[in-house]
Image (cartoon, rainbow, N blue to C red; front, side, top):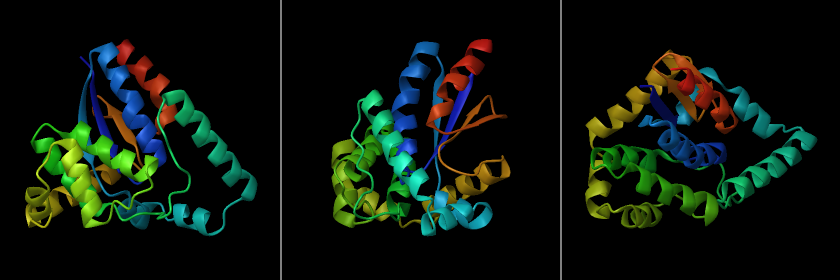
Length: 201
């Protein structure tokens, strides 16, 4: 049976699309998903600073098309995405650490979905403690417990380790998806290729 690893950071709208769209794909193909939260900002700083250059000096036609592309994809996927959010880019470190805790409690999907919805659908700043607490409540987590846990060195180190790992394995952005450890795909629009790879297995 094929195995999927989904390296992700909630700060990307394309990741929101892939997060929602890969779940029915996995269900239809009988494939499990290992969710791997990481910090894409650290990855950009380390190996892909061109992202910052693009934001600082965008090509107007390309920027306009990206807004249309996001609108088309979000409509097709049945989810709400506001482009751009009031706070963009956002510091997602608290919610990404919290995703690790949610994963330990088998609540990663509802918690991550709540974070995506709050940031991309409702234009809420997920770097703020009250919004993190709201995501916890929606995702079935105890806000006080999560608030304490995300300050623990072990959780911080686990997130750093995931970020280091995706870089070592060839990743350069979010979402980075692996089929059976070595077959890497980047982005929501690669899901048909992921399905084909699974079916070949």
